[in-house]
Image (spheres, rainbow, N blue to C red):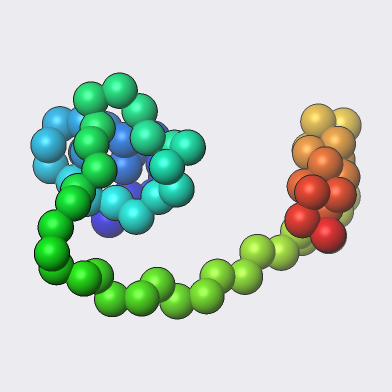
Length: 72
């Protein structure tokens, strides 16, 4: 288990981890596991953009707008 993609990359690169990530997130030294074993289907995921919080920086406001435009 990891709390972020960077931790997953570190564990995988050290040969200590397996992750289910899209191919564009693969980094150097990591390979795709090819096996006859069929992993279970992944559950559906839902992503939401949370409403603004008081005192947010301009950067966070712009990031929210970009994400909402891409996923909205």
